[in-house]
Length: 335
Image (cartoon, rainbow, N blue to C red; front, side, top):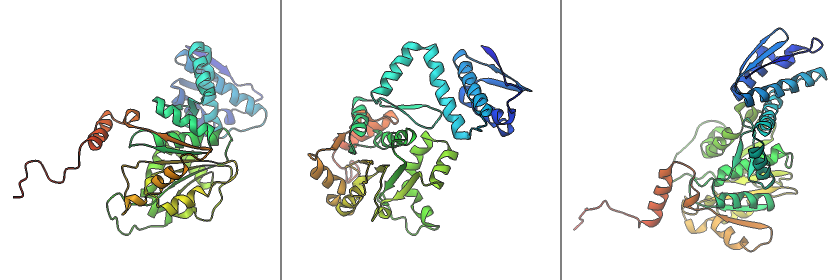
């Protein structure tokens, strides 16, 4: 399919195309269309749905420029995302209706990465997302690869994007997984960055680098070790504590009491991977026991059936869960 968009003579082309045709490049890369501009004419070639979406974005840019508004990079990305959904509705009304129903039921969460939604992959994951939507404090407990951290971050970003919170706070205890890493050089962030890397990985799946950098610089997104939470009150925030099995009882109590007005808090952890010197002192286990019957608190359990990583991860978890610990290689005779 091919279409041509005409930029009126009264509209400045630079804000429409972007500096160095940046906006046209974003549309081209995000929607997979062949797009060329010559003087005041933009030619769009590609699949029907993508061409319609590109036309909608260009129309949005033209109308905004005509009003004297220059759209920034994030606004253009949001326009591309919205246009993609609008084009899908016109081309696939049945599927669009199902997607709208899924959004209304909390089954689909819009994030910043080109409008690509995040959805639950299992009934337990959907129950987890439903709990985050309907409760202010949620515990997501389960083995590696079940999406407990990823979905929590997606839910937090969705709350941020929709304006229901003003800040996203991601925290993690700085506990080594069975290895002594010794002295780490660098400034404060450089020292704790290795511990916070999994949270950054989830963010990079849902936001482009420029948006992450801007949000961190403006304190909209904060990634922090648990130790720096003491003494704070977090209002209008989505707050996520990852790897909570490695908190002590005192740390967990301290973190839980950071919740301020109009905030949501999600605690994630895996009770089979406790790296504390005394596993019995895990704050996650203690909190799950103390708070399981407290009104307003949701406890969500995920299991191996919810693993969404490589299929071998599920088998590995099952092998370690079902088999007794082997201290010596088979066949070793110590007599």
